[in-house]
Length: 113
Length: 109
Image: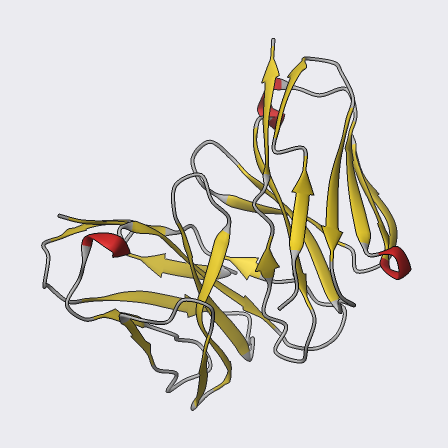
């Protein structure tokens, strides 16, 4: 049981490039989330999904897009990367039923230069 | 939106000491979790505790939901306890977690 898997672990992008951060979970969780963590700060919610085909914005959605075509996968797309998007990105999932906890992936460290 | 405040922001301990970390939140919640972020950046689930008390080895946590706070107790601290401790809460049916700014703990040998 792998839990939440993120790829890649590290990436350097040039300004203006695009990329997709991959997230997959094997726990059959309906709810999935993307967070970013800037140095010395807590995590901020970018986008979330409560099921396949359903997505919604979090606190800091600008510059990002998501899709949720399957229960397992929740990719995060960065278009026209900017230095302000340099951060560590975490994907998480939960079943969405009461009394269940959220589980996080290992994170993707992204640097935009 | 809901506010999550953690205290203290920084804490330095000698190995073997005990400590209490606090998390205050501004509204009713349906989820509260404590995480440890280790020096490699990995987030480790410590407790799922929207109410009540739980213990796991040297760590324990108590949430008093009616008074909107949670406490994380670390006893007989070890150098491996160093890192950042986050409290995160959710308050609606999306279960999206809102994080506090964390308590940075350094345990010295």
